Amino acid sequence: MQLFNKSNLLFLLAIFTMGTVDAQENKRKAHRKGEVYAYWGWNRAYYGRSSVHFTGNDYNFTLHGVKGDDKPIGWNFHDFLDPTRVTIPQVNYRIGYFFKDNWAVSLGMDHMKYVVRPGQWVKSTGTINTPGFENAIVDGEYIYLDDNFLHLEHTDGLNYLNAELEYYHNFITSGFFKLNSIAGGGLGVVIPKTNATIMNNERHDKFHLAGWGLDAKVGAELLFWKLFFLRTELKEGVISMPDIRTTSNSSDKASQTILYLQWNYTFGFSWHF
Image (cartoon, rainbow, N blue to C red; front, side):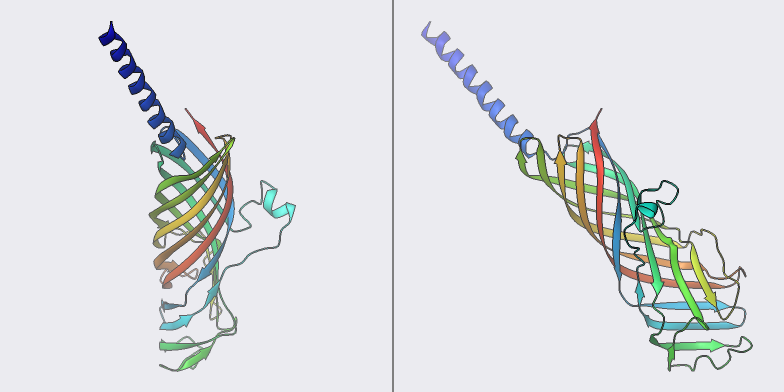
């Protein structure tokens, strides 16, 4: 009888210990295996200086140390919430699946915008034989950029379609909400719709697969009732575009590699099947 009592006591102690450990593990879970999430939001982007190489039938030149900016718009209901105009701002959207507790894979689009800043002096190398622009650059000298010579922007936009691997860690669980951290990285392709006017040539105005990208990110998430979340992310990456269409002439190309820092602020939903 005494052995039976000890066995029961050990059994109950084991169950209690396992339950405590399991409760602690569940408390640390930011998300559970099998959950799916989707979000929508907006971004600001900051770009490093880059070189842009242009080639055509009668020109072959490079502009060095070019500065570009994003193109934010002021808040208004018409552009941000009208379903027919939701891609006018700089937007992000993504869907993800948790294949393990706290680990997810996701697919999304970063719709950034990039505009070569007019009115800047940049170093130029190469040659131009286009009538009327033969003296536009002197090899190795600085050139003043204005729209009469060059206008270049990826504003419809600098579209980075990417897949990412993400890790989530829970810091705080209190009642109906959780505070989670996020770390991850990914790769993808870049499909810009480039608005370029080069020496009065007619621009090419279609989406075009121009290159690839790599990124790494960190972020924070407020999850409410395991259903609705607010999320912010800081993403750093590189976009390499060796095949940018610039004009209606298919032989005219440009190439550019851009380092960027992107800040995203999004909202979304998470649910478990």
